[in-house]
Amino acid sequence: MRVVAELLLRPLLPLDYRLHAAELCQHLDRLGAKLSDRLDLREAYDHLGRFNAGLDDMAQVAETATDRAQIQQLNAALLQVSRALVPMDYTRGDRFTHDPALAQPAWPVLMPIQQLAGLPDGDPRLPYQSTSARRALNRLCFALREATRAARGPV
Image 1 (spheres, rainbow, N blue to C red):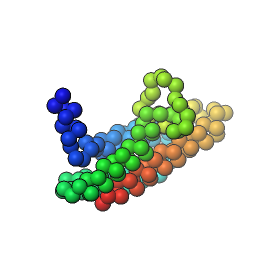
Image 2 (image 1 turned 135 degrees about the horizontal axis):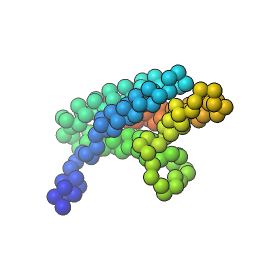
Image 3 (image 1 turned 30 degrees about the horizontal axis):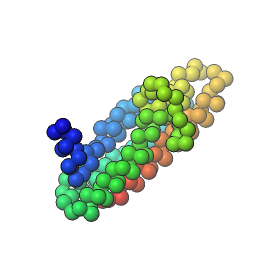
Image 4 (image 1 turned 120 degrees about the vertical axis):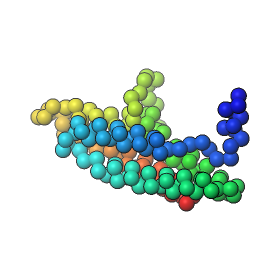
């Protein structure tokens, strides 16, 4: 009960997405090692770097924030970051389609990239899977751009 009360009475939401971003980076590292030259992940790493910088800026502001309006801005930014990233880490589809009520792997948005990495050379599915993987990467990059925009908002 003490933990719930503490969370409810905190003026600033207790959300820190730096560990979340580090987990995504590790996931991309594992995928990159399997992909060879089938898909370039540099764009995702670039967006992730900018997102991390935005999170660091946000954390610095949060450490010294005492003004109620500034804390409300930080909370709104944290919610926007959540809205951008949580669907990437917990769903395969988009906000308008429902996923089946089954267990999901970490970062299910990246499943098409994982599938591309698992295909053998010369597989006839490679061109089609490459397109699906590129769309998945675009979706992730878009979410990271949105999350970065939100993280940099209150700074």
